[in-house]
Image (cartoon, rainbow, N blue to C red):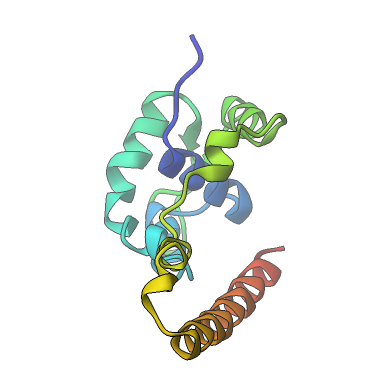
Length: 144
């Protein structure tokens, strides 16, 4: 039976895949440093998530310990296959549409503002969105 994974489990699996053998703490640091507040908030959930992935056989402990004698973990063949399946097409519309995008939410109610205030809101949203995009691109380039 195929394991059903949460978005966080897929994310942790992907981070282990990107980093190669590493510790659970290294994955937690990656999430804590994320430009996404969604992932930063979940950094404390990593240890139980890793235990579930280990139990499902998607990740495995590496026999040699790391430099600080902490347990190194890598993605196993089943984990790579599971991650690849999640990344494969088709992408569901539910995944495209599902987001907690507070800026987009506010756009629905901009009629409550004057024309000048709406323009100011949109300009500020664009500045902040571009800054967030720049930071996200930096993080992405650093991992590629």
